[in-house]
Amino acid sequence: MSTVTAAPLRTTPSTSSARTVARWMISFLGFPLGGLAAWLVTGPVVDTASAVTGGLLTGAILGAVQAWGLRADRRLFTTWTLATAIGMAVGLTACATLVSFSTSLADLAV
Image 1 (tube, helix red, strand yellow):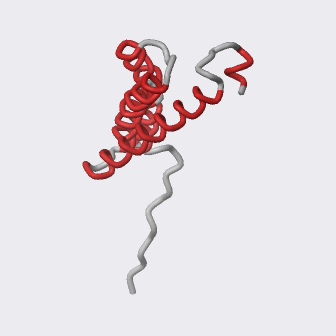
Image 2: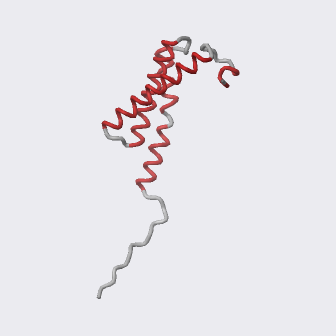
């Protein structure tokens, strides 16, 4: 009769896990990069058009960087990027409209 022994459990993170964490940490750069790109294209958010355009651009860049961090396939990459862009545009437009496009400390707290 033969005996099968189990392989020892690893207690250190694998290289692929470390790479996944590193890719996700890098994806946090998508927000300031997207914001900078939007600001360069639209300038400050002063009306509905600049809020929608700025939100779409910021969200598209943020979503693309996050999808890259997730190692998304083409379909998920596109869906994630579009959803982030639309969500960012809706959120920025709604919030900027709520405070009449003001940026005082009290407005930002709202």
